[in-house]
Image: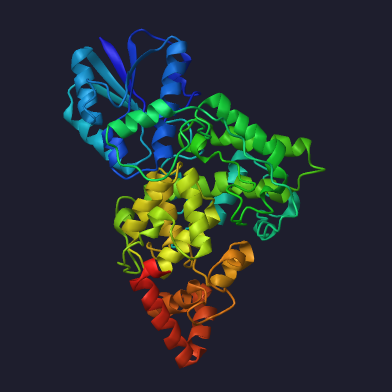
Length: 511
């Protein structure tokens, strides 16, 4: 009688208590499946990264004496269905106990829960031992509250884990949040170190994916795959970030440049979301490095990084489990337009979109401001269906797993949740893009022009959006100033914005 333990592709936690003891009675199961490659159209680099990381993790388990059954995508015994594969293995291996770590996607959680109810053998679930909160901690924290302000949750987490605290009440540096110090435009006056890459040959995995007929998006240099897929590589990227990038991370975390794919960002998101790296160890490593180099590294650089992981990452995961499954279909602003084709090709005259989308097609990556204020901003201003926006975001990014993607898309980016995550829609005209980026200089359109054929499309789209959706924002204090300016706008000017916006929305290929 044996135990079968399931390991999903985003559960590559080397530190999990499961692996501390080796037993011949325990079989670990991992599989590359069409079920997972096909539920969304993923970036080729995303599929490759998961397959490569899963294989590396399987080899690591085997090297430690664990029994592992690993199905490659083309394995003859692979049914391409998670549940069918599990049922098959239970029969073939005289399994008396099935164990699994709680999935972080609602889709898989429901699937395994239904399976659990249908089988006669014993089933036991475990925590993934990765996150710093449980599924329900955030719901408990905000119980009875109407607003779910991330900042308060973040402060609670700082206190709970004693992270950058002087005592149990006061934060280091005298402030909880140095966000106002983290909004600089990068003007080329600092040298950005080249990213840490590994140039791994993944041609065999690419060939496997292509021969199986898996539909993907994006581009890949299959002989020089750059992303970390092992724990050793991931730790190298973490240390490289500390030594070379942390010094200016906070300064330029919101900046954008057409020639800089990563700026000072860490490139750790895939390693963390696949659980190769633990969030607490990442935070502690960065803080310890800062403490040893406080003469060169300002506290604002570190706090901005910690807030993304301890604050936003844990907060978004908590909101996911609090709001699902209704969150997946919420469309508060009733937007139904199609996402333009250039999101899949990068072919547009708008330089900010062209650069951001092509960066994602080339690297399966964009940092949070490109996602929020370029691709997300345009999708919201053109009133695209959030379901289509979800699908694109889930597919295009190497780090996109639904718990983090959908909360950022439906909540933060598209305001489809009506303000549960973001108190106001993150929309802007071209002026913000020009303030935070170097995109506008090389653009076909002129950001300084408000109307006319060569005016920045974001300018007309912005005012048209506010006009179209102003009923939804009545009573929202954070929108009152812009709505007041809208209502004072010359009627002819507003009409010109509306006509231009309508043409942009109907004919995106012309822009």
